[in-house]
Amino acid sequence: MRVLVEPLIVSLISFLLALIIVIVDAVVNNYGEVKITINKKKTMTVKGGVPLLFTLASQGVFIPSACGGRGSCGVCKVKVLSDVGPYLPTEFAYISKEQMKENVRLSCQVKVKKDIEIEIPEELLYAKKFQAVVEKINNVTYDIKELTLKLIEPKTIDFRAGQYVQLSIPPYGKINEVTQRAYSISSPPSENEHIQLLIRLVPGGAATTYVHNYMKEGEKVQFTGPFGEFYVRETNAVMICVAGGSGMAPLRSLIIDLYQKNVEREIWYFFGARAMKDLFYVDFFMELEKKWKNFHFIPALSSPDPQDEWNGEIGLITDVLDKYLKSKIDLSKPKEGYLCGSPGMINACVQVMKNNGIAEEKIYFDKFA
Amino acid sequence: MSPEFIEAQKNMKPGVISSVGFLGDDERDLAQIIQEDELLMSQLQLDFDEVARWMERIMDEAVKGLGEPMIVEGKWEVQIYEARGFIPCPFKDGIFRKRVALVRNLQNNAKISFSDLSIHLLKKHHFLQGRGSPFRIEPEQLKKLLD
Image (cartoon, rainbow over all chains, first blue to last red; front, side, top):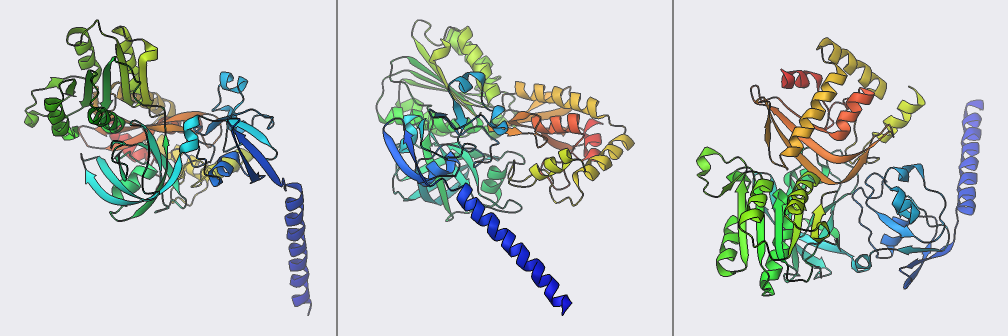
């Protein structure tokens, strides 16, 4: 009898303790309904107690986040105008002193416990969640895939050439949760029923490994967007565009968009790769160059293979850029730089552009950082 | 294990800091992984500080390639891959760019990839990641790469 009673008593005590915890949690952490005011013009009533990032997402306001709200990427920053308590230790590493003065916070770390007011870039109010189907997967090089996503719901997307989306990667292998990663749109805004993305395989990368090794045509995917402030400024300055690898994506979208709009500006597009096997879309841009007199395409190989029989520019893209800025591009015309690539590549190109008289504030880039 | 190690081990599980985590399918605990790797490194006459300095040098050279492969000292081909965002150390003592160098020994074709965080984990914590982790630095492979 004792054998039966004792476990029953222990179970009962455990159950009562768990019940007390649930009740206390519900009472203490029940913040009821709270209001979030965005940019002083949009107010939403939400259930309190949830991190700001997820609360906003539940209301259709999507703040970009590269880690899905784990507090490990530092991307989901918003300016909080109300007092939401001191900075958390998890935030310190990502928020600069200047940002602290402006009360910039990581939205995944700040819980909405009372009415708060926030400021976010206006464009984020227009970002949406999209359902799409993988229409085509095309190998553009041995390590870069071009994904074509056909939109299901909403059926169309409005974006500015140069912007990016956050693609959700489903759980696979040992990864048991959704991973989100940002990829620039490589197709032009005119093709608004689908988008194209260029995804380069990163060794050990959770999302790129999925796209390269697991993703299938016909598969349904989700993404949010559009995001980003990398777009063409409406001036008449000569555009100096530089990219390498999958940095091609936003520039391809920008250039096709300008061509379709019959823009008269002079555009130079420098694309760097190591050898022929790393080059792609070359025929497309060379054809475009033939039919669009303002457009100049300069692919450059840093280390062509002997069998490449390459007659084009040879050298690191920074060296080729420097040569053209010094000798082939009209020095007297105002210029703007448009760059997309790794921080290392962008920093090097910005230096070359500055050395050649392009003002730093006229250099726009989409840095992978 | 110390409270610091217990906390770090929690942070190393998939989904906490990174989707794949740092422990792979290794069933050893963090302290065991570090102790056994320290022994292995010592048997292979590999010094953690020297290896870290070499990795930092390789990373610096890889950056100069602007994303394209570079030949370093006529011995290694290195290529850098960069992604958006940052990643914190699971021991909570640093935050690093998502930058990965892929290194290949031109003579024997041995390959290793490591990130800025991998260098920090190796240098500061003697942690080479668990077996099966995509960023595990296998001491034997490292030795082959350095030969």
